[in-house]
Length: 107
Image (cartoon, rainbow, N blue to C red; front, side, top):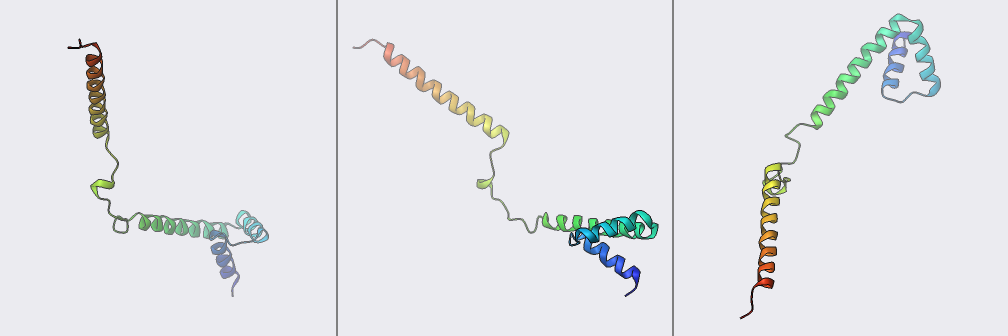
């Protein structure tokens, strides 16, 4: 195995979060000292990040999401306002009816 391959393997291991503290420190020192290793690390990090973004995009694919029917969706804002107005009118009618029946003369 060449030294370049060792650095590539260590970079990939680091990007996957599998390096030890000593390996991370060694890689960090080499990135600071060597522009070639730094460029290789940045290239690998971009590829690793792009693959991670692509995986997230696949997770959000509408084909894999379960379809929601109209009954399981939460009420929208206009529906909430209409329900509140209807409930308020009903309570007002009941309250007025009770007050009217209390104040009405008994026959």
